[in-house]
View 1 (cartoon, helix red, strand yellow):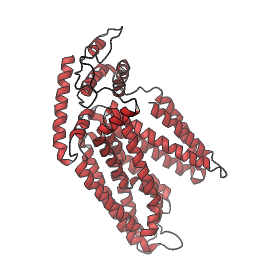
View 2 (tube, rainbow, N blue to C red):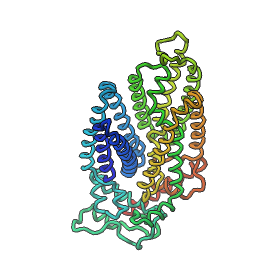
View 3 (cartoon, rainbow, N blue to C red):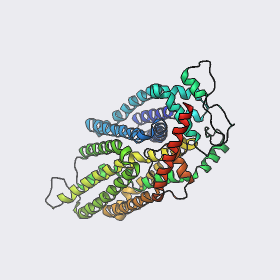
View 4 (cartoon, one colour):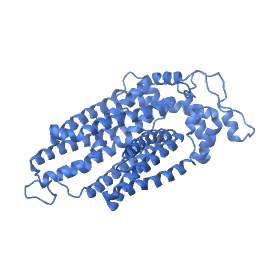
Length: 456
């Protein structure tokens, strides 16, 4: 919660700096950009870790993708506001975001911390209170099952045998008595977060396999250059011959919203892996269409500007439509897969004690690589040609598709501890281990049910 609050402060400060920046004080604009960038990275990682920890296994995909869905709503609202106000009133457009940020800051003050995180910090009474707020009458069962599940993690430090997970209290309600009698075996308890630099380094080294996989996911996502293509979508559409790119921006926003909405509805049924494979395949096909379309359009530009969509004198209407459709399909494939599932997968595969740090590091890596990609995107148009640039992106996305096939496991409907244990103990994290992951998850679920029955 503190990370989300800090994110809102950084965003509000950055938006205000950009809105009030003057020509002779352009450093305020750059400060605002940097501050907003820090806010986006911090808020994205923290919100994904929080949602992954509070969501039930069979609904975790919908919880995480709901975050991306609301981001798409914000993007669509920004497109609409930009269209209504126009480019000349951009200061007002940015200023509006300050009001939204203040409302979000106030709402976060009423949030509770994740019960899972509170348990790992030893704040058991607070975890019980937070679970009751989040789950109502099921709060007691949620904490009991959660403690049993965390106790199955074999990778944590040993605690005293027979330690009471929840301390005694003056209030002896039925729920508290049940919780106070819960015992955890000394060889399997893992309920802590590192508090010193050495402990953090040790935890990161112990979790190097899921961390490397998380970095691989971030790198694979950035290799598709989807965020850069979305950022320069207006320029791409103008190069294709669209004279009113603001209307096309609205179409992009609608497609983005539709893609994330569909992913939210089917992520827990179809699974993360299938969505990634399907979405990446659609992105590869769309990039091939963009490459072919711009290859045909390459000689159609004159000094007077790009062709109009309605101007078919040179016979390039089909190619222009191909570019527009391919771009929209690319955005759709991205939002069905990587846009919402990157942080979802990262937050699911990382262990509890490094989830926040790992999500932040992987997200930072993604944005750093996206920044590098954005610096060379339009300059590569002049150096290699538009069609050739999209051909190279198509080749890179094809490599991402193969990497996804061989390295991304299915995480839907598994407990976080079962996913983490399998990733950390397997020598191969690919399609070959999917059956083992399923068996491990079923076994873990059965053990949890047995322990939970004993508690009751």
